[in-house]
Image (cartoon, rainbow, N blue to C red; front, side, top):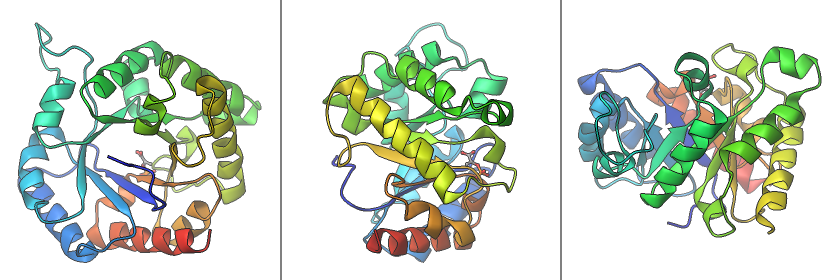
Length: 261
Ligand code: PEP
């Protein structure tokens, strides 16, 4: 899959929301709202139990499916875990790795993120790797140190060819679910830094192959100005992806922003 084709990339992370029938309903409404329109790469990311049913709902649409987490082993005595190939089998092309909520509540470290990224790539899936600083780190001018460490450890061993299969989501933790968003300039500064880090790591220009999303209280009213920034290729959206209207509106704003880049 050529991920980078000059379209904004918009992903909706439903977190621990929506049972199976609610997931089908929301997927149907998003499908109707976007109505096979070209111009954006759209991914929805429901809870595990809804994946297969949502996949059926998405037939004959351009909307793709992702999972919220994954384990790095393919099979074995790991009660409660899901492997990359199981996620693929359920119809996913994407999987979130290292979301700040997984790091905060479920022990995901950069080392675990790295194992997951490698397993996901081996299975032919695309990891959406989440990175970002706390408010305290930002206030102490540690944002770039934190982001650099998360990239170098989380993507350790990733080569030139693989980088185009990886999506990075810069999500300042202080902006997730808080209604507080990074300003476009604040976000762009970190996105540019991330791109430079990636280029240093893999030794090639990534401006036309590595997708870097912004996440953190993205809403219809702020999506345009964020996505218009040079190194912001789209958004990972939590709260505003739970209603079809706001999610579809963000997609429209992202498309407008891309036209003006
Ligand atoms: C997220 O959880 O990835 C996220 C960005 O959430 P929200 O849009 O609600 O801040």
